[in-house]
Image (cartoon, rainbow, N blue to C red; front, side, top):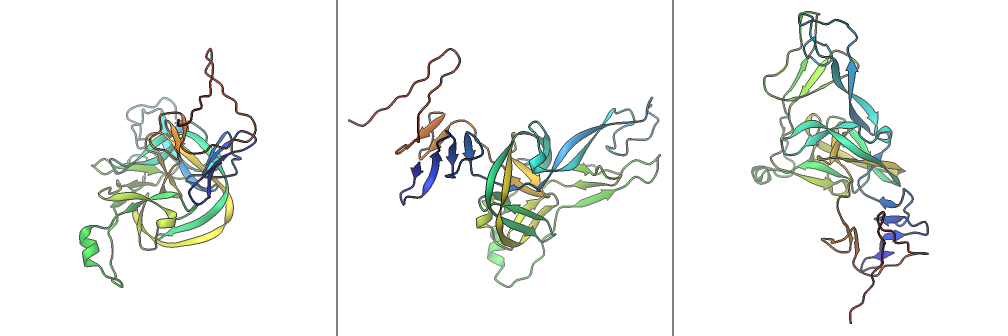
Length: 307
């Protein structure tokens, strides 16, 4: 067990050999990390392809109503809403590319069962809700220096959201109207109507945990930045998270949320780490220590003490 200076347990290796980081009850596997979590019913947008049913298409046929591509395309891409606890490795889900502010599809590396934890309900000014743990970060828009100097308590102000356009096909011979600039389109698999979302403004943002959020702050959503209107404490609930390649975030219940991921070496009580697992301080292991090397090699345990 690893403890901080006041005796609070930070991590533990139990009798089953499971390593818990941020938890003293590692039940989710060999490595159980208590990180960024949401409830199992959080809905993500998963990318899908659907074959066109009409045969012998020609270039004179009307465009595909689902994707808006030319009639000769053989697949349609769309996003379906899926619970996070039903996501599979290699699924592609909607994420935010922070460098451009655009929404893109990114591959899921894995789903993590994060155990039962205290959850909080976060709600935005447009009614978007997500149930999440206190340490889950969300993308917050930092107020500009001018805003900080101009506003005082009690002021009423209105913020402009990103442009949004809706298009709909009205006949076989009329295609969807799309904007000239490059923006990401999310098309509902439930109908012909499509909504085009402009990229999120990324001029001054930071990731901030739920425990640090306050009503009035603005967080990133699929429709731009929205004000947080309430954060309610709820009961404990089963929680999950995913690891997403490259972007390391996902859109859950239309709110941009960070993901849990461990890459490279793990350091406990030390940074940076030079080893796969690097522990600074006393190490207390229950039962036996097993050291296994790679195929064809011998594992070893090296101990040393000053002097």
